[in-house]
Image (cartoon, rainbow, N blue to C red):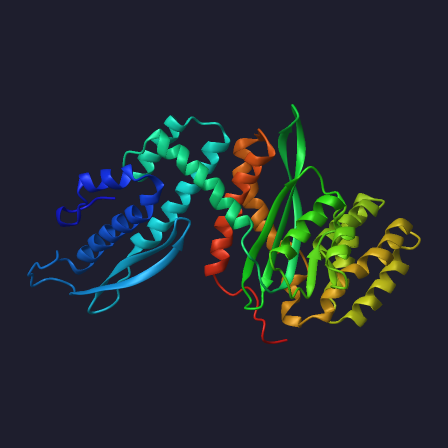
Length: 387
């Protein structure tokens, strides 16, 4: 970022902000982005402040305050206005992305054991100002506090609850083991998605799932009308104990994958998958049940294990038919968690093996917190008012 003479921040003031540690970062972000926005306006109207030009493309029209929520708290920026309209500074969004990127960079370097001195050098290149090792140390401490506060923040009413798990390599008691990452997201009554919770556990045993779900309820989660998940080990018992009586939709995508284990011949897999898609694509539950009966009869001789499995398991994917039809595509699978899982994988494959559970939780929390902010300020995921 290049600053013109009348927008340059005094070096002694930047030094003063830097000396204040992380407490001064919000002011630093505000001042730097405000200066960048002033430059953008000057370039847009082809004139510096108070400069008289005949070929200018517009006129300055003061500033409009805009308060933005960041990881450093709420920051109010002075957004420059142009009298003729048609101008909005890109520096604001770019600056906030840089602030988020800085938090993620600190998390990744902190996990991988990079020294605070090296982190300070890298942070200096990212921020463009001098940062001391002691300030980085304080920043990483505050990062942990920030992430923990986010994981324990109060929840509210959620209509649809999605649950899933993935695994990461974590060193435990001197051995590398698979640790289960328990994830929960949901669709609120305003139709927007939310990341609700994350936990790192030794396994998907009932005790871990139950503790995780009880934690969500303890933070105020209520109003759940449907739970969408795969048939994870330990999840069923925990779900019934914590959310007794709430309908469950078994992920149709995972059901199709599970069915392949019961297909006796490779050449039959495509046909079986197509039959299951036809069942799930039925216009209503009655038709789906009719398709299922015909399909079970079809495979009763050529693939009896598949037929028996389908008769018992496929109906667990029919709960969706009891909900508004315009919601079916969004609530029939756990695919809404797929992007979340992919982004986690993109970050964690750099680390490969986490030194402990806490370091694993730290990085993944930073990832899902980032995505959760996108959900909060993003588009409506489901129109909740119509059926």
